[in-house]
Image: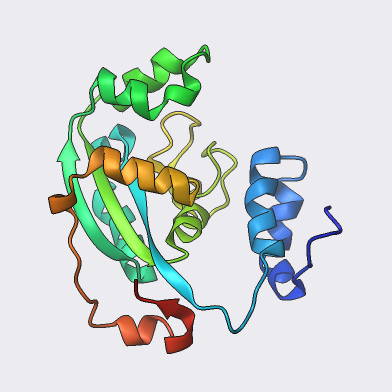
Length: 203
């Protein structure tokens, strides 16, 4: 463990099972470090952030759209945009450019073009990490039960959902899949009951 990071004992009990199950799993440890060691300042006011979610053909074909979107809705995330679209090789070459040299690149594109997908933009405080925590590990066979992939996926490819992994990536991906006029700004009626007033900053 990185001793320079302040350990948050209050978070350890929530994630000790994850550590035991995913010991030596680099991807999961990176995600867990955010939960375990994320600096916290009670005086910090966080801004709302947007993130991209793609419900893959494996979710569409299995009739899981409502089940998955209802989880984000019940969590308290605000849906800013949503549409069905058929992905093309052109947009996938751009979206998955970081995988272009990998041997499974063709398989990824074929899987993502197997049927239309549902593309969503969600907003909330720390929305990027919230969505990723709800999504679970890339490989559905080892994803923790209770996460989307842990409950609905048995595959590392047909793994139901894509989510943005950082603020920079989220901004790029939202702009890639949505035109400005396709994103809606509106106030959630339940907003005062989702966050206390010192937990967010409207920007």
